[in-house]
Image 1 (cartoon, protein in one colour):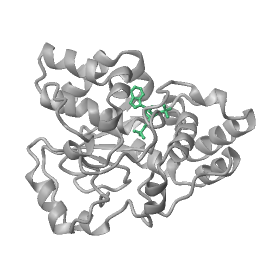
Image 2 (spheres, rainbow, N blue to C red):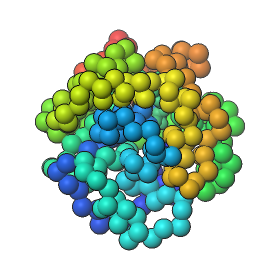
Image 3 (spheres, rainbow, N blue to C red):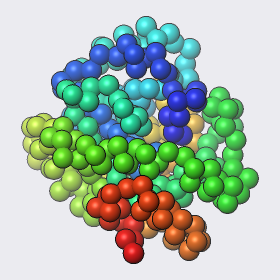
Image 4 (cartoon, rainbow, N blue to C red):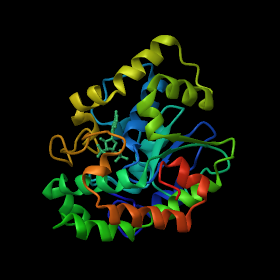
Amino acid sequence: MSASKASAAFDPVILERFRPRESDVFINTVPKAGTTWMQQILHQLRSGGDTTFESIYDVVPWLEFPGRQARTTDERLATLESLPCPRVFKTHLCDPPGIDIARFIVVGRDPRDCCVSGYHHLCGMTDDTLAWLGATRPDSFETYFERWLASDWEAHLRTWWSHRTSPRVLWVRFRDLKEDLPASLRQIAGFLEWRCDETTLRRAAAHASFSWMAAHRMKFTKFSRDDNPSWKPKTFIRAGRVGDHKATLSPSQASRIRDLASAHLDPACVAFLGLPTT
Ligand code: A3P
């Protein structure tokens, strides 16, 4: 589910009224790059390993997402205001508030894997969530693929790549999280200047593992504690692999993603994301 500005997942009013703080952290991603994983990582590092939350969205809200409960913008803003510092938010925006004062963690993932993950995301969504979004389940991978290719994934990457040298922005790669999660946790804590002791780092690594998140998937598939899960079991915390696209994309589809990325992104960004550069 992207935060398309025309979708039910986008609340423009909250963005106008939201007041960012210096201690705020925004997780900023292309959909399916590992956003939920980073929500869990940051909440674990911040809390020393809290597992009592019922939905990750209660402790790490999605800024531009109005939620499925009938709540006014004033009520939502009051909730965001009442969160303890440092607040952490998820967003898919190219231009979120707070760009001059807050910190941003961008998760980069091979767009070919994001593409395939997005297909399973839609196929696994419950009927009532699809209806609420006004979306439909794709009738074939090919139909989905053409729609995905025309979405604005490369615009987001281009924008955030242009911020990569900012001291307020940290790019983290999905594949580096997979390869060495403890090292990535240290890097993230260092960037945020959060003092995390060894116990916190150990707990965070355990609670952000694929197996832990898969075993507690209800915490990651409901948009609030009062909500129903928006995905069928085993369709959201799904495979969690690097290179998962190989089983699904045809060589021609993979080349079209690579070509689009090469046409619109800095070659260094293309290489960083793990796409072939020739
Ligand atoms: P797959 O569908 O390829 O399995 P997002 O949160 O941005 O929507 O991204 C979801 C993707 O992140 C899914 O990818 C999901 O399985 C993967 N993911 C979530 N938690 C993970 C973890 N702890 N380890 C590895 N992958 C994880």
